[in-house]
Length: 141
Length: 214
Image (cartoon, rainbow over all chains, first blue to last red; front, side):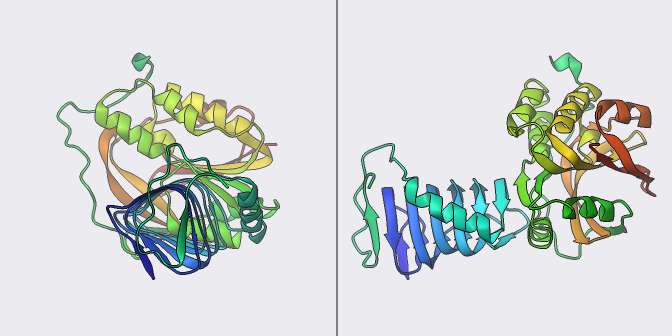
C-alpha cells in the first residue's frame, strides 16, 4: 500500500500496480487498473480516474471508471460521471453527474481513456520521494 | 425577476440545521400504486436514461442501476432551491436550474421529480415543467408528488425506493417556505405535451402522479 501524504501535490499522470491512498492533491489522470484507489478524507482530486476499485472519502472532480466498484463514503464528494458495475453511495455523500453501471459503459469509458489524455494546466510538481510502484508522469504522453 | 416567484421565507426563520445521519430503518414507509408503473415503463426501454432531480440516494442508485440497467443522471435541484431560500432571494434560480438540465430534447426515458414542485413558485414550476416535458422521449415518464394542502414546508423529503411498490421517506431540515399548491388543472397545463397516466391521492394529501409522453 502506497500513501500520498497531505502535503503532496501532483500535476500530471499517476499510474501504478499497487493499492494507493491519496491524502494530498492530484490534478491530471490516475490509472491503477488492477488495484484499489482510496481518496482519503483530505484528498482533493481533479482528474480522470481509472482503477479496479475506487473509495472516495475526500473530494473528486472528474470522471471515475472502475472495473469492480466505486464507493463514495458519507463525507465523500464527487462531481463527475461514474462508470462501474457496482456503485455504493452513502447517505450524506455529495454526488453530481451520471452513473453508468453497465459493463458496456465501463468498457467504453476504459477504452476512451487511452485516447483522451489530460493536459495538465500547470507545469508538473515533483513526485513524492517514496512511491516505488506508483509512477507520476508529468505532462502529456 | 424576483417578483415572479412566490416565497414564504420568514425573515427570522432559523437556518436549516444539520440532521443526524439517517439509518436504513429511519423514516416512514409507504406502499405505492404508481411506482410499479414507473418501473414497468422504464423496463420497457433498453438501457433507459433516468434523471433524478433529488439528492443522491445510494439505495436508489443500486435499485435503478442494477435492477433496471438505467443510466442515471443526478441533478439535485433541491440543493439549488435551498441555497436560494437560505439567501432569501430567488434571483437567478431559474437560470441555475436551467443550467443543470443540459440534456438534449427527447433524450430522457424517465424523470424523478419527487415533490420538487411544492418548493417552487408557480411561475418557476411552469418553466421547469415545460423544460422537463421537452426532455422526455416518446413513451418517457415523469414521476412526482404534488401537495394539495397549504402548509409551511420545514423539511425536504428523501424518497428511498425499497422495493417495486415501497418507498421510505426520510426528512432533512429545510429553510421554511410556503408550499405551492397546484390544482389538477394547473398541473395538467404545466406539463403540456404529457398525459397523466396514473394519479393517486395519498393519505398525506399529496397527489402521486405519473405522466407519460405519448
